[in-house]
Length: 350
Image (cartoon, rainbow, N blue to C red):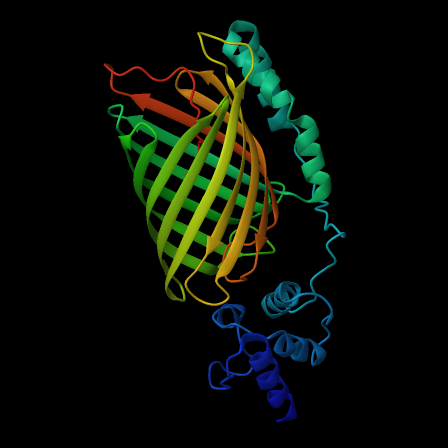
């Protein structure tokens, strides 16, 4: 009773509102992680739960929530961040060596394959760093069909893992349509399936989230000297495992082409972006995503992408993970009477 009174006083002092103990049930070990994610818990409630169980009580609300979620899902304590759990299973080198010699053969016969090989060879230090640091992987395969200068269609699939190509926990399929109403204004409508699995392994069930999403989008473009600036506004209508939700996203991206011109265009594009995720429910702010990419257009219809993404999550009921290495392949097709642009200055991401 005294502890509940303390919670009521704290909530009233911080938010100016009276706390109603009937807003959500008591935080107990019998609750699932998904049930906990449906409510906004006071930090005193989280600390109280930790004190009743062998969970560290220090840190922010987010850290406490992550420890509790991990404890409820796996029945053990969340390991310290600087401790990496290594997979000691044997590694089969036959397939990578076979792929390597096949690439060497192709490089000797085709200039484009030489460029691809050099591009991915440059990723070796990045991938080594990602393995050491325990960075996850973020893989993208995108197709775009340009029907006219104004109208285009796209399809995309993504596969993500919490460790470097291990502990796969997320995939999505989506598609939609784009229409340029002005040269610097584009509207889009997309829909897709977004599946999030339990952490700790590859596609572990039960799922954390099974979601269908519909999203209208507005994108504005502007040029500032050689820089290309993109403002993207997206409204998401989400049908999740725990019910219907709304979410709103804003992304600011700045890109700059570089490299020796080939066929009148620079083949490389460096991009940095920051995206905010907010909702119409408390605590409103949900996620911040900072991303840096380099795109290399190896052919008029093919673009390779490598990048790094850092993600900060406030909520704990959605896709998890903090740092990812991004690898993407983008294909663009068009009607025969329409020529593809020599260089794509838009951020290839949906």
